[in-house]
Image (cartoon, rainbow, N blue to C red; front, side):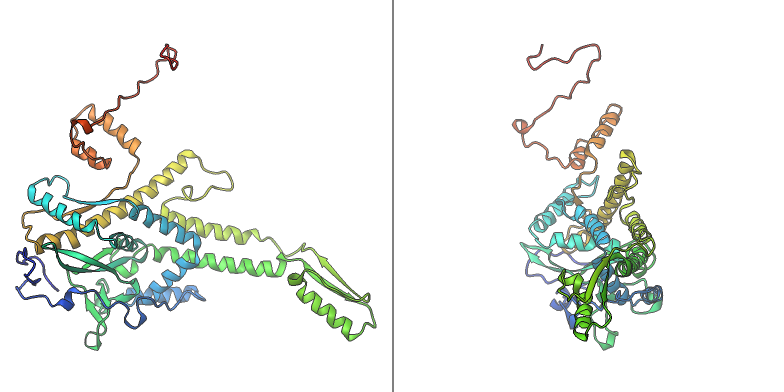
Length: 444
């Protein structure tokens, strides 16, 4: 594996990128992975068609041994077919990736090297249009168990910076053996490496969901069961509708009716649902009878709703933040609790990305550019989390102990005033006095 812990300082554009032993890194080792070898990037085998419990378990076992392709294709299939699941997963990713971001030093590191390193990296990344797609792809690790992006580094304005983010499809990864099934390798090699390439440190950004095995982690392993059951319930409900949900067309013909009349009646019964009318002779009759038998169909709808509810709890932490109970169960307070759980999950997703960024990009940037004394820059995703409640908390704590002004600016995503003329203050609203009438508009 390529070590970056002892790389030499690189400041001049004509200096090549070097490995830990001072040897130049070949350009091919800096370039992105092959865009679409043998269709791997865009192909899907659609293994969720006809999915059963036995087939699902076989995909899981293969993934645990380090061959997750069928499992990952199945995750993509089920997500595409289950609109409820897709909507929740998209919301969880987009509500983090859609906000502004900034590269800043870690908390408590306001020394000059750390500030300079973070400022230089931030200046370059703010102009990268691919960065937001990179952020969204990394957040998908929550569902798939992992996400990998190939980083292409090169010189730009005298600094070694990432110039391209190539988000590689999840199905293009596996592990070299069952004994090393916790390692993530790229399926892009030749026969000499059994088609696998080890991911070199510094050239890849890798996010992993919590779990001992990246191919046996993530929400996809948990939601697939209930999406499969839901699709089976929908299929059974469709069968019920075909058998009992439509009116029954019955044709009568008189004894002695000719073959032409009987054939015309049969064609009319067969096509009445499509045509909506029929022209028959006086010797035949067509009657539409409403369905009155066939059992209760509500069991299928209840089954589908139960599967949706379980997946909703897995992805969002509750049900009242995505749907309103038809029974009237729930309350404003309960919905607030459920929303708080979803917000906590999104905060967790954002923190995992920020830690990955500092490890795989910030640290590499510092070492390749000679920022020896600087802390690894981190990215701050500017998501507002309950500003009113946070402000009230600051007001209570600030009455007892001094608070950091810079931290308050950062947490509320505010910009310090550039000079006194740029500063503005708002007087706090006075609480109402029960013994006094509220003044009118003229102050009386």
